[in-house]
Length: 325
Image 1 (cartoon, rainbow, N blue to C red):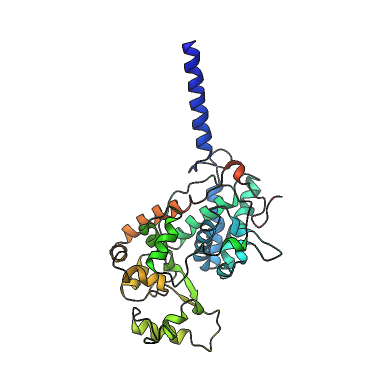
Image 2: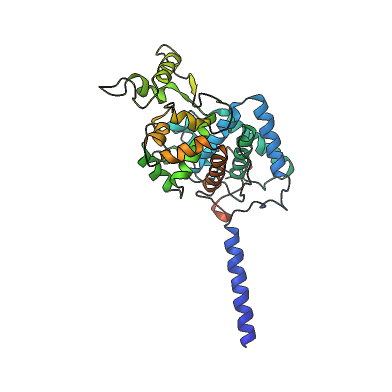
């Protein structure tokens, strides 16, 4: 009787472990079901990257915007004829089409080999890793096993993504909701090293900062003058400015050197240096690309765990832009 009882206990423990493991992400999740998913995605991203360098920043930004709303579930990919999906929210209208195109093409390539197996959420995560590497950043292993979400609403986006004028407290608070630390936030901000922005997002800093200061005093004067020239009021409002003044298409740590020099484009960039509580981290990253790379890899892996759906919480979409049912 005692032996039978122990066997039952053992079986229950095994079941608990198996159930728990189903809810966990794994670097080798598709090891048997789609063993070539990573090289397939990598090839697609590489081809797209060779066609347009904006592929990298567009894909990385897409991943961030996806994870911060409904979790990393590819809800940002959904198309709505009514214009009410996540991608239709005002803050998401500036997401470059190249990011969506990269994921959709990678999905098509994967479906041709492993139909109905790999989620769009995982493909977006893999494409983000490959984009970072192709732009000159670190490579890293990606945890897989996400399911695609069942919900995508523009109204869900409000208040979920950082704004250009955020101060440090607002940034830290928003990232903390997703179990991301201040260091994680500063490291992820480093993706702005290959970012670009429309002039309207920072115009106040260079044209009408306050009643006493036309230009934000935390901004380097020559940099402010350069921005005024690039974003003259007669220019196309869709004109974009690089966020890294030195190597705008290379994923490196020079973004942080810009912050030290007073050349952060957004208030939310420059505050990382002007606020004394975050300044030491910025200075460290500015001086050590190795430390930045290490912190970025840790942070983006943690980002990839935000709001993950597994099992019956989601689905494997056949088309990333549409729910299966």
